[in-house]
Every structure is written in C-alpha cells, then in structure tokens.
Length: 365
Image (tube, rainbow, N blue to C red; front, side, top):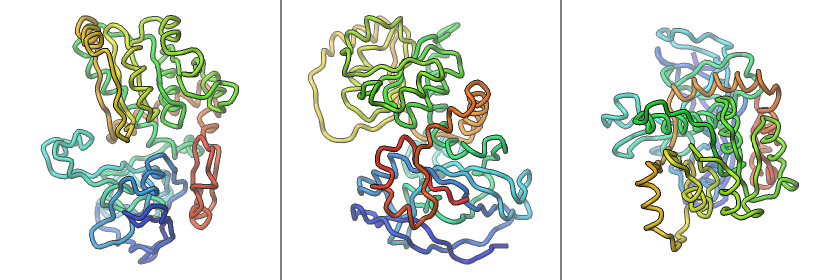
C-alpha cells in the first residue's frame, strides 16, 4: 500500500553539532494496523534546536542520522485493513513517545515511564516527522477536526500544557474543592503562550512573566489579547511582582531559566502547585533560604512537581481547548506561527532563517 519505498527527511548526525542535512530514509510498508501519513505541517521547537546543537538526541538503531521533528499535522494517505475510524484524507497528528514495556508504559502512561527506556519520535531512537511522509501504528494517531487545519501543528505543544494541568489537578485532588483562580506562567515562548491560552480558556486569571519588556516582546500582544497580563521579570523585580499578585494557585515554569525557577518558588501561594516543564540545563548553583522555603512549603501545603511529555488523552484535551480558544479569540493561536518555511531544502538553514520566531513551522502541505 506504500506510495514509495523511501522519503526525504531533515536530519542531524547525533554527536556532531550543527550537522543539519537532508537524507533519505526507508518508508516502511503499511501493515494491517498502520496508517501512512503525508506531512502537512511540522513544527520546530526548542528541543529541535538543542538536538541540532547536539545537546542530546540519538539515532535509530542501524542509522547514523536522526530525522528531527515531533510536532506534526498530517493527512492520511493509506490505512491498513484493521484500522477503524481513519480514512484517506483525514487530518491527524501523532503522539511522540513510544512505550518501553515497564508497568507504567504497559498501562498507557509512557509519560511516567519508570525505567526511562522509552523511544521518542524525532528525539530518541526513532525518526521524527520532519519528512515527506511516515508510517505509524494507528494506536498512536489522533484525528484532528478540519476546523483546526490552520493551527493543528500546535496540538503537540498544547498537549504539554494540558499535561501540566492534569498533573496539577491530580496533585490537588487531595484538597476538597480546589478551585484555582490565579496562575503564573514563566516564559513567553510557544509553550508559555499556549499554556497561557489554555489556562485562560479555563477562566483563570493568568500572569505571564518573561524577560523582555512588553514594548519589546511580540508575545505581549498575544498575552493581552486573551485577557492575561504580561509582566517583565526585569521591571519590577520579583519581590514587587509578588506584592501586586493575589494568592498564586498555580505556576507553570516553561522558560528554561534557573532564575525563573527560583522566582517561581518564591511566588507560589498557599495550597499552590508549581509545575516545572522546562529543563534549565547547565550547572548553575545558587544560595537559597532553604529554611524559609521549607517552612512555606510545609505550612502552606505547597507542591513542586516535574512534568514531561504527554499522552493521547492530553492530545485530545489540547484539541478541545484549541477549539475553545479559537471560538473565544478567533485567529489568536495562529498568531503564534510567525515563520513558515515551505520546503525541507529551505529548512536546512532553519537555525538562521527562523531566528526571532515565536513559532516556526515547515509547511509541506
């Protein structure tokens, strides 16, 4: 059922910084439980850039290259005989992580993999979606409504925000009638902005904190358009920001900044949850008032928790919330996509051509 036996892909050579290049990879045949997907849009994110810089990433067994890309909107080209609910022409997206066989993965919670032996499309051990087409098991494919065609590539990063909400809600299930009203989001990149939109869609008062002053940040207008408040961490300082905020029920940290993590710990309110989404990297150390932090966390029932990846349920939640966002603020989510590359050839220079982007995509459709 396959149209061709190989496809072009945008790849790196793991271990070699800035080795981005075009390659050819085999296109598997379509088995009875598989679907073949033509890529319409593939998103570019900070993880891709770190893989290009060779900070991490691993190729599939037997391959010297790794095709990058884990954010995708595609269209079904062919479906195996056992596939139900997917037809040629349907818009779809795909989850990223593949289970390793540990109890959590076997239970469908590979985002909580206990042995860290999972693989991930475009990241660890599996080719990604920055390619013409791919074949995938139907169990990892999520249908996308036609009304999300323009922003469907944002479903995967939105699912990360949904996972953060799920984690926070799960933690606070211990508290009767937990009704968070005030949220702070650190970071105004794609994940930060999508988290802001998701929390606003849940009718929370959201304060999005980033380094750049509002006058210098294109993201500030997006934050304001959904009724959230943009604040710069430079002016005023975090102590002043804390004084002007009510009790902060939820903080989502997605800036990649060590300083932001420190600030988030200080801002978190009584019965609050701090969800860490970003990995700060490096080896920075700091002197912190640990006794004061400990006292506040214990007496205020505060919680700090990490969150990574997402599941099919989070993808479906992302679809529902993106539809709600589109209904309430038409066209706003699409404003995150500031750079569109139109071919894999053009994408070879993406590190330079997408500099300054809020969200860049390769539009192959």
